[in-house]
Image 1 (cartoon, rainbow, N blue to C red):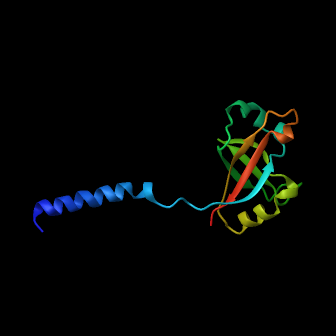
Image 2: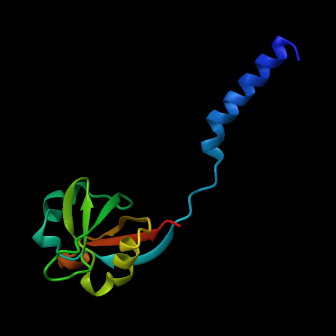
Image 3: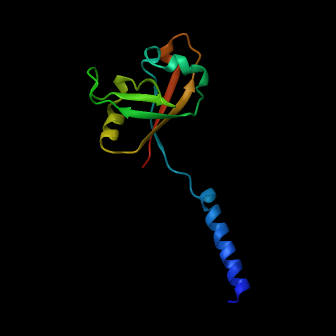
Length: 128
């Protein structure tokens, strides 16, 4: 192969490497829970309500030392504690997190409801 052919091959390989992420298969995520945020009025959710958007990523953190719920999972957006996953529905997610399973969450829906317990719907995914 002459130098011109080698140069073309290198350019093609560079372009393919740069474009590969755009053509990669989407990452599989399995929806395991859809729940309303608990504790809306007790944390920072009211102060950031106007900034929240459906689809925004959320951070989940285990709070095993919580005196009211050993399976407690806090919900955060952009560094603000919004509240908790509901106690009655956190068994499977807390067990998965404790086992080291990758878990992601996002705002599934926002409702301008008079009842603050119904305002934020959280979607929780397991990433196999």
